[in-house]
Length: 52
Image (cartoon, rainbow, N blue to C red; front, side, top):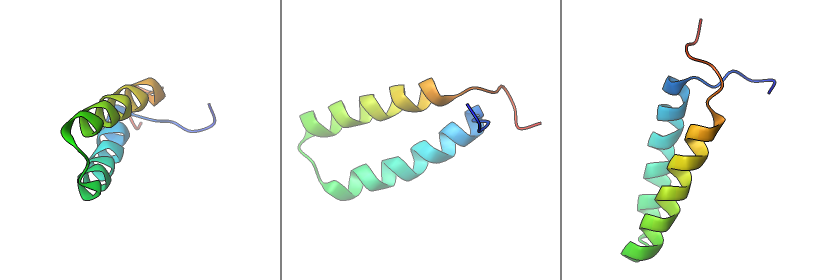
């Protein structure tokens, strides 16, 4: 991967995705399914332990 993705970057991305998902006002089942996917996708993108 050409970009370093740290756990901190993952958390920042998830913060913004949480705001976006909340703005959709989805039914609970859809919201939960989408959020589960977002968390798993974010975790899979982490490829560096730190920003250094």
